[in-house]
Image 1: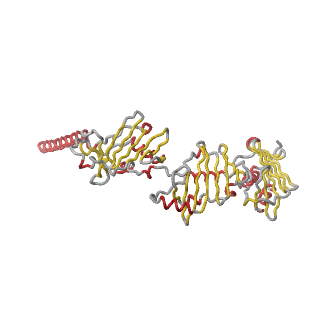
Image 2 (image 1 turned 90 degrees about the vertical axis):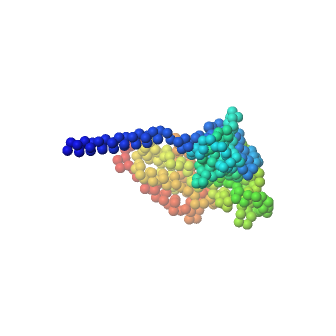
Image 3 (image 1 turned 60 degrees about the vertical axis):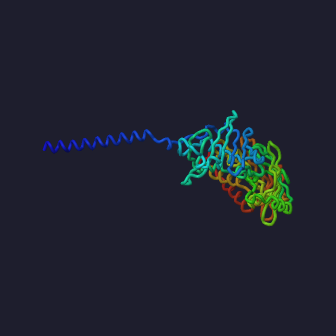
Length: 439
């Protein structure tokens, strides 16, 4: 029995020794990962240091990008504005560019990798005029990577294909396709002419005002949409090479819209013409004539009423300080003190007051008219912003509906009779607080 136990123990010892030996060997192997599996940083340069980028193709085409202050410019094959987003993406890739693996430590011939005459030769220059280069060759057999090398370095690397695609760009890929490259945050005025009708808008801080055809309060969201559509208007380069055809279509086309945008750098103008079902544009900020999308053009098909502020009051979501309503023989006076509302010294029910204020806040025109305002039948004044804003609106009856005018403003707003009926009912429904006390 003792001999059998000794044999079993010896076998277990041998097995355990084998496991320990195998484990130690595996750990040692892990500590000696082949160099070809390690990534290598191919370009040692940060985004903010890159001043120039040159991309040479095997086909003979060369693209040069140059930073001027904070803006990038295509300097070759022809001077063009560069697309800030496209360049930013390229810079991000350049600053973090690393290989996937090392294919060969000491390559005796680069020809087999397509690196003698590379598909792309990439050069960067930093602020100190130091140049770094990278050669990009043929695809690897698997097709998921390309061969790459650094001039003067004997190694050949594998670089992910998607990284190569960041540099495999044409001038059209990298150019700024905006027709009006203005600074949206610094625009002071916009002028839009559609169907021979001119509309103009001026901005003071964040507030917009309709200037033409007459001064009106502007619907800020509508003017901002117009500004965004103009800023996003881009040239369609899908038919590149058809310059004569495009120019002829613009010359024979019907004027559709003209837009002028002024920022701190000056005024830029965009002319749009329609030829059959297509639209063509000419900009003072870009050389040439370009086809544009129908969506870009239709977004500018507006009339003055589209930009007028239809709301009668501007106090928005802030609680006003005072509300005064005269409706024929009936009058209502409301004053806010902290979170409470009072009327002639009596504390009012907050629910009924809030319902009336919400209705006043939402009063909007169904449309605008030029004439018809007669003797006022209702007078509504709202004081807000600590007494700094006082808005007075007069309403007159006009057939079945009502017309309204803001004090000292020319616009005449038409409101449905049902809207005013709801306002009158909410005023008569005002109640005192359940346990009202004198102020």
